[in-house]
Amino acid sequence: MNKPKKSLKTEILLTSFLNLQFKKHFYKIYIHDQRSAEGSGPKLYVMNHSNWWDGLLIFYLNRKVMKEDSYAMMSKKGMTDFPFFGKIGAFAVDPASPKDLMRSLKTSLSLLEENKSVWIFPQGKEEHIEKRPFTYMNGPAYLAERISNLKIIPIAAYYTFRHDQRPELFIRIGHTVPPDRFSGLNRGEITNDLRVIHEELVSSVREDIINEQTDQYTLFKSGSKTASEWLQWMKSPLHKRSIK
Image (tube, rainbow, N blue to C red; front, side):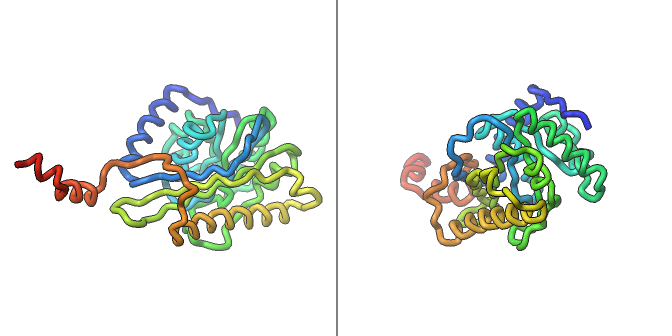
C-alpha cells in the first residue's frame, strides 16, 4: 500500500467546513491536554471510537492542536463512502481481512519510521461509548514491538448532553505511554495494558462530567447560540429596551 498523497487545498477547505459544522452541531467543545513536551520522533495516537464524528475530529485535532505530519488508518467502507479522506492522509483498512490488516499496519510502520504521526482507532469499529471492556485490536502492540522509541498517546473523546440544547464534547489527551513500559511483555499483554490505560482515560472524563469537575478543561470550540440563550436574551432588560 502506497503512502496517501495529501492535498493542502483539501485540508484547508475541510478545516473551514469543520469550523462551521462543529459550531453548528455542538454547544461547546473542551480539551484537556495532559502531554508534556513530546519533541520529535514517531507518535501513535490511539482514540476511542463511538460515532461518526471521530474521523473528522482526529483531522481537526491535528490541524488545530498537534499540527504534525499525521496520517490515519480508516475503515475501507469509510474510505469508499468518502474518498476525499485519502487527500487528508487517511488510508484504508479492513479489520475483517488479516491480509489487508497486515498491509495497513506495514503502511503505518513505514510512516512511523519516517517520524510521521499515525492515528488509529484500536477498537476497529464504532462501539457505544459506555461499552466495557473495549474491543482492542493488536495493531498498536504490533507497532510498539517494532519501533523501540514509539510514543503512544491515548485520547479520550466523550460526547454528552448536559445543560444545553446541543451536545458537548470533552477531549482528554492522555500522558504519553513510555516505550519501556512494554519491556518483556508479549503482544497480547501489551494490547491488554493499552486497553486498560485507554478505558481508564475515557472513564476519567465521564467521571469529571458526572461530578461537574471540569475546571481543568479549556474551551476549544464554542458553538452558535442555542434556543435557550436566545430566549434568555429576549427577556433581558436590554432587549426589552431595544424594542420599545
